Image (cartoon, rainbow, N blue to C red; front, side):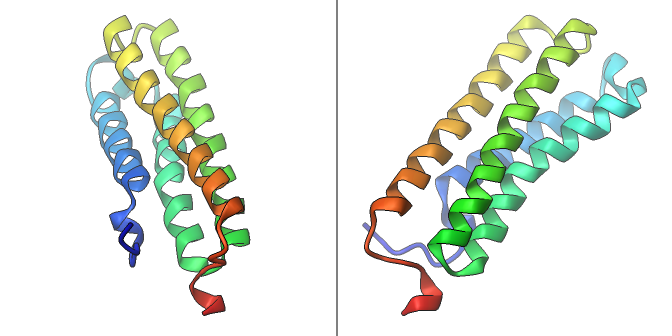
Length: 129
């Protein structure tokens, strides 16, 4: 396995970025535009996923990285909950909900797998080399 040198190389960060872009796109069309509170909240939570992955990576140690990954995982769950509100308020279709829910759920699972890997590895992070 190749060593990851920057957070942008992490597949989970790339997927989180895609989700964030998708969320931004749906919040800038139709009735979603006028639901300012939900619009801001879902954009913040989806952005928080990728931001916490990046911040944790840059901390340089696995314990801190794991802590930030748990925050990112929680933000993915928050985004899924907000997707329900968007669906209930008819801002998005069932199809779009399913698509974004599944992507967010997949990211959460990837984050948990990554956490489990980091807990088991002997490599403790860049700052311990």
